[in-house]
Length: 111
Length: 113
Image (cartoon, rainbow over all chains, first blue to last red; front, side, top):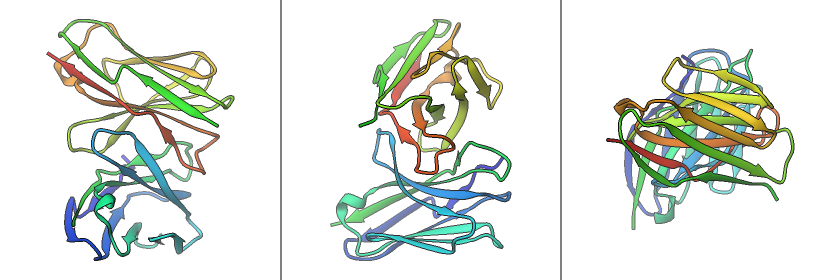
């Protein structure tokens, strides 16, 4: 299975701190995406990084990709209580059209 | 703008009963459509995807089936539900491969009792 794995499974930080989540996957990819899910809701797309990119920024989000290690990280800077959610990475496979989701990191930001 | 509708939001069904979950997309044409299932506290498992009317690909063998009778309609069905079918079902769409991301519906919480 191409399904990725996020690490840690759960993360609790104080408001204002940075949060880092990692994603590892198994096979070569074309693209990797990060999503956010508030409890009991659908997922919201945050950012996509292509396999030929190493770093991408969007507001307080910074995503890195290391294809040699088959891993990605999502950094949320200056976290806010509203960032409390689960975060998932999703990877396609080099020969396919679908994205496969990881197991998620549950982030709690304490006000 | 594009919107995706998924219903019902919650559903409690007895074991052995049939299931029909519906998902419709507005504001776009020829979307790729997806059904995912999320077990409690777990990741998303891709169940089915469709790149066109009548074209369904299944990712895992299971008790469920999917159909796409119209371009922007995706239906998840079962003839007889099992306890293990309980979960959070999410429909999603993308334009092409999803390079701009998938757009998800709000999900259906299915409890089989």
